[in-house]
Amino acid sequence: MVLEKITQANDIKKISKADWGVLAEEIRAFLIEKISVSGGHLASNLGVVELTMALHLAFDLPKDKIVWDVGHQSYTHKILTGRMDGFDTLRKYGGMSGFPKRCESDCDCFNTGHSSTSISAGLGYAMARQIKGGDYKVVSVIGDGAMTGGMAYEAMNNASRIRSNFIIVLNDNNMSISENVGGLSKHLNNLRTAKPYQEIKTGIANSLSRIPVCGEGIVERLRKTKSGIKHLLVPGMLFEDMGIMYLGPVDGHNVSQMVKAFKEATRLQGPVLVHVMTQKGKGYRPAERHPARFHGTDPFDVGTGLPLKKRVKANYTDVFSTVMCKLGERDPSVVAVTAAMSDGTGLKRFHNKYPDRFFDVGIAEGHMATFAAGLAAAGLKPVVAVYSSFLQRAYDQVLHDVCIQNLPVVFAVDRAGLVGSDGETHQGIFDLSYLCSIPNMTVMAPKNKWELSDMIKFAVNLGGPAAVRYPRGEAYDGLKEYRSPLVYGKSEMLYEEGQIAVLALGSMVKTAETVRELLHEKGYRCTLINARFAKPLDEEQILSLTDRHELIVTMEENVISGGFGERVTELLNRNAVGIHVVNAAIGDVYVEHGNVEILRRVVGIDAKEIVRRVVEEYRRVKGE
Image (spheres, rainbow, N blue to C red):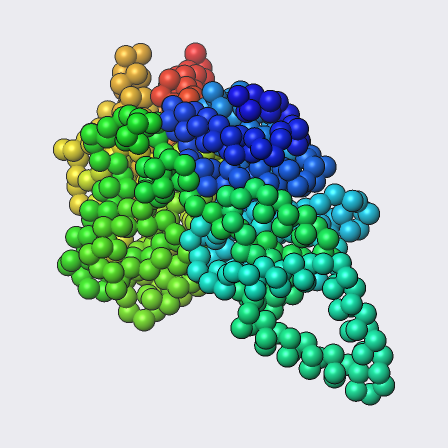
C-alpha cells in the first residue's frame, strides 16, 4: 500500500507522481472504512482528498501554516501528518478530535470548529510573519458554504492591505461563480502570475505616476479600463475588486494542476485567492448522491450507506419539525429562519410545505437574528431554528436588534447541553447563561417531547422574545401523565415529599427522576419540580420550598456561571433565606469530545455524582 508510507508530515513528497492517484484511492477507502465504524464527517472529507494532497505537496508542514475553515474536512490532513492510527479513537473521549487541535499536532496551527474564521486567523498569522520577519507561507482553506458568512468578507476586506504573500483557497463544490472557464481564463492566470508580467506592470505604473500633474490620473484611468475588461473575462472580479488576486478555477481532483496553482500563488505579493472546484462525497456513491446526509453521519453499512442503528423513537428535532408544520398550517404569519441548517434543525418539511415562508440565510447567524427582527417588526412571527453553539455568534444581534425592541422572535435552540463527539466548539453549554443575561428574553426548557411541542406553541404566541432550548438526541417520552398547561414563569410540581427539594430544568428532569429514586433507596424524601422557565424564575414556588425543606438542589445541563442554579441561589440570598443549596451544573471548563453519558460523568452531572453530593451536603447540614 502507498498509504503505509505516510508516517509523518511531508512523507507525501517521497511518493512518486505516478502513485498520487493510488494514494487518493487508498485514503478514500480508509476514510470510508473508519468513519463507517466511528461516525463522523464523511462527504466533506471525501471531497478534499486531492486538494489536501496538493497542499501538502506544495507546502512544508509544520513550518508553513494551513488554517482549515470549520475543520470538519481535515481528516486527510491528519492522515498526511502521521495520525492514521488515531482514527480508531476518532471523536471518542480521550481520542483524536474530528477537528484541528493545536494540542494534537504541530501541523494544526489553529483550532477551528465554527465557520468563516479561517481567513481572519490566516491573516493574523501573515501579519505576524510580516512584523516578525518570518519566511513561512500561510494558507487559509475555506469552503463555499463558509463564504456565505459575513466574517469571511470582513477578513477579505482587511486582507487587501497586507503587503506580503497570503493565500486563500476557496474549496467550491456548489457555487456558481465559476462560469467563465476555459483557455482564456487559464491564459490570463498564467500571464498575471508570471514574474516578468508582474515586474512590467509595476514598472509602468511607477513610471506613469511620476509624470507631473496628470500621471496619477493616467494610472487611475488605466486601472479602471483594465478592471472593466476583466469584468468581462475574469471569473473572480468580486475578489479582484476587493484587492485580492484571483486564480482559477482549478480542478480540485487534479493534484498536478493544484500544485502548480499553489506554487504560482506563492510568487505573488499580497493576498491571492485560488479557486478550486471539488465534488462533495467523491468516490463513494451514497455520499455523492446524498452529501447532506453524509455531512455528519452515524456508523453505517459501507455496502448500502444505510445507518447501522435504526432510529425507532423520534428525537427532539423531529418533534420540533412536526410542531412547526402544524403552526404553519394554522397561522400564515408564522415563518421559519435558519442559517444553512434546514436539515439539521428539522425545517426541511416546513420548507417543502411553505417555501415562501422559509428563509435560509446561509452561514450568517448575526444576519439571521437581525433579519428575523425585521420580519417580526413587520408583523410576522419568525421562528429561528439554530444550534446552541451557533447562536453564540449572534449574541449582539439578539440583544440589540431583538430584545431591546422587545420583538416577538422565537429562538428554537437545538443541541442545547452536551452534544458529544464534536467537542468543545459544539457543546451547547452556555446558552442559559448568555440568554438569561438579556432583558426582555424569556427562556424555557422542556422535560419531554410533549412539553417541547407545548413550549414552541406558547413561545410563538407570547408576543416577545423567547428561547426554547432542547437537547440533541432521542426525545424523552416519560412523565406523560404530567402535562399541566404552561403558565408564564411558573414551574410544575411533579412529586412533593419534603426534606430535599430538587429543581431540574429541561433535559435534567429525566436525570432528576433517577436522582430521586436513588435518594429514596438511601432513606431520603425528595420533592421534584420541573422548573420549565430559566427566566423568569418561579420565585414564589422557589421561596415557598424553604418553609418545608432542608436542602435545595438545582440541576441543569449548562455551565454554572450565570446559569439556572446561580440565579436560584441569588434569589435565595437576595431574600435572606438561610437554606443550603447544591448547584449541579458544569464547571468553568470547555468539554472535549466523547460519548454524552461519559461526558456527564466526567463533568459531574450524572445521577450518581449528584446523589453523592446531595447526601454529603445534607449530612453536613444535619451535622452528621
